[in-house]
Length: 189
Image (spheres, rainbow, N blue to C red):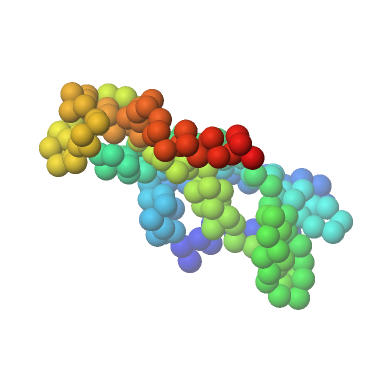
């Protein structure tokens, strides 16, 4: 039995009405996928398959959380994810990914493995920046970061442990006077 045989759906056996499937994705699933985006998590997946005359419509509800490394302290951050996605599957002569969640599978096979699609739907929901909420980062790691941080002359060194949260908080409200001269050029034209 293969790693992802559980996620194979035989479309030839789908009834003309609606079929429902449920999956629980855990550490073993993410370890088998072996991708750097998500390596840990726990999700419940509900799949509703509608058999339409020209295609199969997979309505996929995913609820759970992913554990990803914090960008600041490298400890795991729990990222809650709840999403509803639709995947359209059509029969054709050979496998093709037509984009926009449309997949063509060979009619003679009639089977689709949705494991990778489930992973992609989860990975696409993870924000680009993942950090702990204020005060929850690993304190020893933050102190080491502060120790080796290069401080600009304009920055104050009296920053707290959460100074790494948002770059925006460290920006100065002072405007570079060169911009004023450039604005004058635009205003005069």
